[in-house]
Length: 291
Image 1 (cartoon, one colour):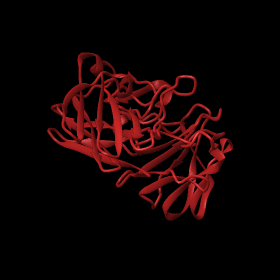
Image 2 (cartoon, rainbow, N blue to C red):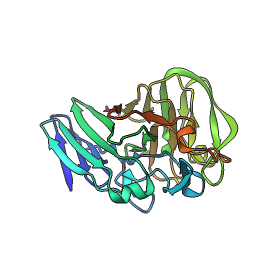
Image 3 (cartoon, one colour):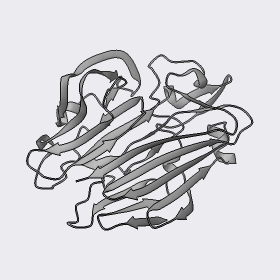
């Protein structure tokens, strides 16, 4: 089921399938800022990554010595969420554990996705509650794909990413299988801009774990249209676009990341994993502001 929210500036749509947002539209001029999910390139819009981010080795991971299987980015993005409520400026969806989810992720949880409009900003909050009688472990992140170029008369190479702090940061290199290697490549060197191109993503996503910035803006010198993503508190960042030149770029704040290429330990011991005690709740928020 698709639901919509709007104010005088923007309109969004969001779906119970995957609990994800589908559209962010400027009501004044009709500009669409979010990828439409065309499966020719990529069938998602802004999927929720839970309870893993990226891949685990051979799609398998261990909890207390027992092996479970999860596909890339986990179960949330393909699950049907329940509609909880809607007000003039907020929609709430919820995914609860089930007999089926326990077969692939052995923890009892509740996951909410909350979308709230604040003028020209969409505030997105994910909330995880521990419903189990033990500590639960998970990663969580987001994978929104933003139109780039924003104006169809332009091209990807006309755009750049602007960081709100000057960065000197290497990118973590992914293996051809999509796992993290222990290698790094120089990427940002005393700069707050990153020019976009097809070649930038020839080796898959750019993964960072030490950014000083908490905001990245998609900009072009040829356009007055831009979009900013704020991600306070997220320790990891992925930036990705398909190698075939699809007209979007993903700015992905994460709590957690893919397995390292030789990882064979317990899920609870994985780098970046979140532990949540009985009855406790974890939440994280990112904001998308359109200009």
